[in-house]
Length: 132
Image 1 (cartoon, rainbow, N blue to C red):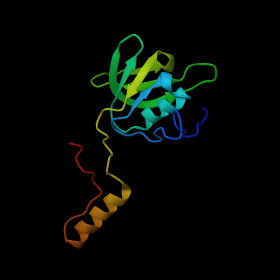
Image 2 (image 1 turned 30 degrees about the vertical axis):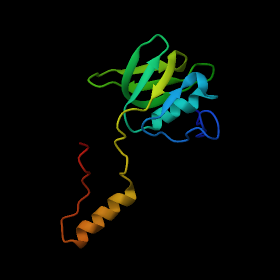
Image 3 (image 1 turned 90 degrees about the vertical axis):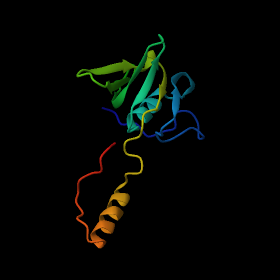
Image 4 (image 1 turned 45 degrees about the vertical axis):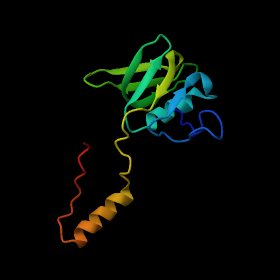
């Protein structure tokens, strides 16, 4: 599977990282693959608006690209066992609108909290914080 450089979806002023609230119009980007990769890199749910008017919300976990074929966005949908694949030629817009579940949860923050607990005499462990 070919690796792609993390490029801007449009120009030097366009976003280079996935952030909550970002909306990606596929018709407005130079390279749709870059827009799909931003959606994949986002750590929250996305809403995909198809050209036929359908709206799909879920978690983008993969992007597949084969030479000569439209790239494919792969999603997990809430409450569904099967995964959904959508080719880029069917997508009008992608909204990164779900909560970024990893925002503010860097390794450095975890180490700082761990050290603070240890210094305070509290039990410090490797369990993660609850998501909600």
